[in-house]
Figure 1 (spheres, rainbow, N blue to C red):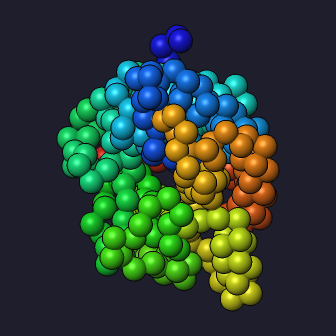
Figure 2 (figure 1 turned 180 degrees about the vertical axis):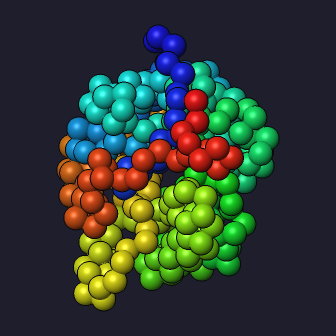
Length: 288
């Protein structure tokens, strides 16, 4: 594939972020081509259903296979939404971000801290992080967005002793993030608050119920959107040669993507209505 053009500004994800399953690995024959091809078909179905933002999170894949997958997913996104409407992130593999043409990197538990991460990926690539119960927004000053988890009990992995936040808990954290930076933003011209997306156990029923209850309560919504894994790709984790069986059901993936996109459009608005890319805090203007 052609080398992607240099990114010129930090781009935020749309209100619906799809993380890849995180379970891809070599097939029994030791190859990754077939596994990547099936993930590619699943991504085609999701993007055709309205998904604009994908995050590649596959810890078991070697760098070469990970990069190939990222390049293919970027091509799918840009083919559907254009270079300006797509958003691709890589999880943890900071050294692959530029080669993949990623718009963002997401820091994992073993990743670099924010400042050295910026040195690796440059100032034009957004840097995201994960937050959990007990964290405060002030611990994440400088990141471009947060995935706050787990909102509900995850469908893709055990909780390992963590408490779920609930929709209200996620909204409260997002509101706290907004309030924590509002006063500083007023004087600097920067956007108020770190954009927060809910993650963990987000499915069509749980999201629809939460949005309906939220609407009944009224008041401003502070969550920017949601991120999900099993709620899009499916929860059938039966392994078949390097992947889960659910990934082969592209019709179901497409149908879930359409419904999730519709709910997010109703709850969070159109992707085109989202705020502009993040400015550099040191200059107050877009990064070049």
